[in-house]
Image 1 (cartoon, rainbow, N blue to C red):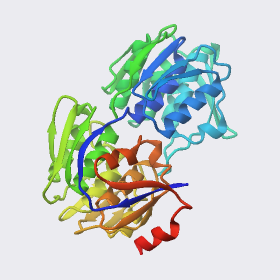
Image 2 (cartoon, one colour; image 1 turned 60 degrees about the vertical axis):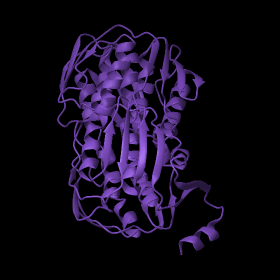
Image 3 (spheres, rainbow, N blue to C red; image 1 turned 90 degrees about the horizontal axis):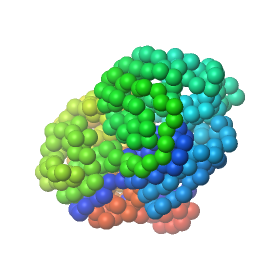
Image 4 (cartoon, rainbow, N blue to C red; image 1 turned 30 degrees about the vertical axis):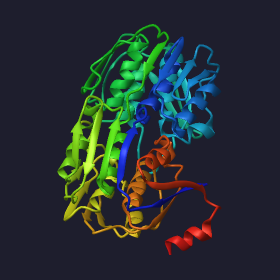
Length: 432
């Protein structure tokens, strides 16, 4: 197992290039199953979740041809199975997108119950409701979700989501693109990666309107053909580097972004005393003075994203005064708080609210990543802390951040990746 060794207390300076959006890529790659032709997908992030998605498609019979490090061609004309590998699918949350894609194209799907980060119950009842409304029979047995459509083709329908769900919105979109007739999804989620998936499908011949609003209308088509598409930049990766600058101080140009997607994060960091200058596809982030307290509540887009909650909490640990962080999207997303307390943070959690009393400084300590975004918060805290930190279970971090160690080192951070058995005694001595 790998871990990160971070010598904190160094401000960040320079430029960082943001990779393609993880949350878009892990839906768009399964959506290639809907296409009867060759998809060329560009700006794919080099992360473990993407690698797993591609391996699953390959096992189903897709021909995967890497063009370069961030571009791949996917040919799904010769799919020979609609049953995914149990071992692969259970390692990634986004494996549930395979249900909508396989069901939409072939009228049947058998996908292992998804895995991924464990920070509370994340039911797929809204997905199942959508598939059933489109005419599919869905059962869960033997660790698999089995879905099938009568007559091998779904039927368009009106679907109202009881709760705003990003995953259900995207999954139902994929299932409906080749259904007979029209489908309307009401109370749909509006996140940028939903728009990106709709744009990808439309570029392949789908007829989807309204993505990015709370009502999405889909006119079913007979087939999708091949084409090229570039994935949008990663809003959360960009926000993570912005938060790192806020915590450590310094000045960083965050490149290859869509500034509009960053508004909710930019506004909150500015409230904390961070300067942010917006340009066409970059943000210049600077923090020279002290951090100010702020209250944060996570909300569906365009509100503050739940995937930035741990990172902003790490920043607020160093802000003057008392901050309140309220998590309104997921339950049990504060597992990482005990790790921050090891570093000297003063945080009390009451149900879905964390009360953060700012401290003068954090101190390096052995800490671990509890999940993907909590892991990013550990990196931010370690970069800002005085002394040396060891971060373990970094496989969670590498699910969603491409080359995070190299990118941070290029900004002047003292961070390195080591295999756990190496140098253990020496590193323990550094921390003690």
